[in-house]
Length: 165
Image 1 (cartoon, helix red, strand yellow):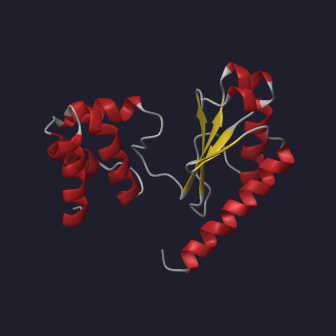
Image 2 (cartoon, helix red, strand yellow):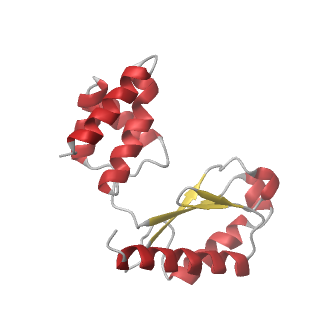
Image 3 (cartoon, one colour):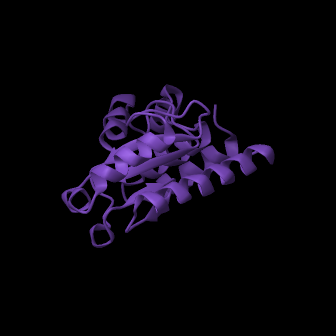
């Protein structure tokens, strides 16, 4: 169950929207942040807040790549696999990331820190190949820079965990 303050915040967001569906992604993303992923409970709560059916929310949740309907790591890595990124080495970048992390595409590291996912487009074609870690976009990547970014992110997550977050 979500805290009353979060529920009120989400209801205010819906009230400010032109239509309830306009606020749906915002509501789902906030509940995803609260739970770590959009749980079945989160779908039900989203539907209640939005005045929609759970099926309508589920349809939206499964449409958007960055709404996660199963558990993910503390940091989700999206590697762009659009034609622009592919042409600039995105496939090699994805293979490097998987090897560096010791997981396959779509999997989460055993320590729960990273989940590696492909993404159809991150909208950063001029900076290909591109990936996003959490909400931060990185472009013009090579294997060395990608590995460095992973280590920086891992250190940040470990710091958060030690700090009790």
